[in-house]
Amino acid sequence: MSRKTSTVEEAEVRPEDEKMKIGSAFTYGLQHVLTMYGGIIAPPLIIGSAAGVSPTNIGILVACCLFIGGLATVLQTVGIPFFGSKLPLVQGVSFAGVATMLAIVSSGAGIQGVFGSILVASLIGLVVAPFFAQIIRFFPPVVTGVVITTIGLSLLPVAAGWIVGVNPKAPDYASPTNVLLAAITLFFIILFSKVGSAALSRLSILLSLIIGTVVAALMGKADFSNVFTGDIFAFPQPFLFGLPTFPIAGIISMIIVILVTMTETTADILAIGEIVGTKITRKRIAAGLRADMLSSAVAPIFNTFTQTAFAQNVGLVAITKIKSRWAVAAGGVVLIVLGLFPVLGRLVAAIPGGVLGGAGIVLFGTVAASGIRTLSRVKYDDNMNLIIVATSIGFGILPEVNHDIYSNFPSWFQVIFNSSISSAAIMAIFLNLVFNVWVKGNRHDSSVFAAAPTRAIPTATIRTLRHGDRYADGKLIDSDGNEVPIIDDEPSSAH
Image 1 (spheres, one colour):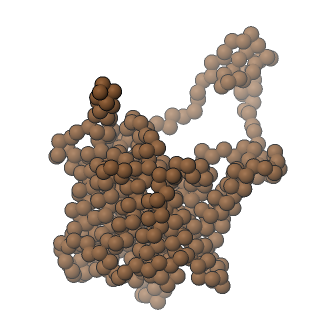
Image 2 (cartoon, rainbow, N blue to C red; image 1 turned 135 degrees about the horizontal axis):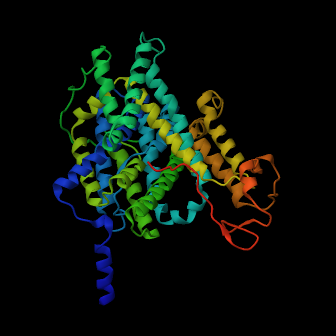
Image 3 (cartoon, rainbow, N blue to C red; image 1 turned 180 degrees about the vertical axis):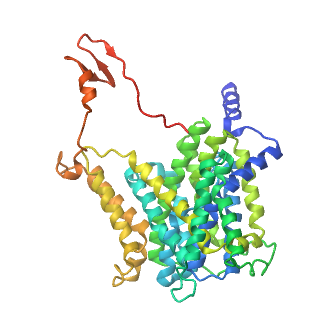
């Protein structure tokens, strides 16, 4: 009995379980929503535009995205048996699948094929979630870093398309005015990030979109005529765009995306656990992944896409020190309410392409930079990781720099490999197996790619050394066995 009581007491004192006043919870929850709003609305805008969806229906896509994101956030934070990590994690549509979904759309399967692929892949993900901790070893940083970097790089053409336009025959195609709007938006993002307060900096994307749109309106470049066309309030209608279809190639590609998003969510769970100061177990990771996959499986029924934890909100928890999951749950309620008002989605859909493109440069570039940061932690000495990274990224970017490279291949092959994310992931996983898992046959320094960078020691350092000095176990020891103090002259990285 005492042991049970002790366990209950331990559960009650977890930092993430801290209760908050309703007003405070919703204030902090709104801050989470504003932080991730620009990121969560981008995928439905991208996919909807590519699928030829009308501005009115793009507004519905955005509303559905917010509604399901809110439900997913509540499930992840509050939790039910076997579902939800009960951590302060905000859920939303993942960027990871955008490139693959664009490939499915362009293959002719349309948005119905996207929804069907997500539904099947998510159900498979739901089944494998408890076992994912066992296969996660096939997704080391060298693989996930490649994938995340490729996601960002492959989405940059989308930002360029927003700026330039999609119709080469349109009178405003590649208009200098659109480029100017992108530059203005980008300028304000940088300005708010540089000189603003911490709160202002976190809202830089949203504020810059607003300013850019106002400038566009003053220039006569914003059209809000469709904003009030349709319902002001509406509950998301299931299968609004028709019943889903199930292209085999699309499903295979989306399974890869699901594995990537599960890897990202696992990383976010571990990161938030460290930030909050709470214990993370495999059982808790599995519950978080089940919540991810259940939300992703329900999402296409309500006209939206895969769900995953938002990394930028993990950073917000670290900055604000607000560790309570109830604050994030309140943010989920805010998302649900926003999702019940399609007029808000249509308002977002009216943002001019040039403005979106300026923000997209930062949004998509940030994704690529996150991948590069992951790759910077990879060990490249005396292994073949450099060739894994080089080949995988190069292979992944090929269909972006030349869209016709697989044009004479079967359609199923095109759906898989026309997606930069799928191409890069498949190559990275395969090469990681070849060089890092199946190590038989590997040779020491067998390739220039395995060589460590040339070492160089400043002359000034050499002059300070004396005969008999040696470096062992991270310490500099003199000939008498005494430790020589090492002064850290690296500039502080604190910010």
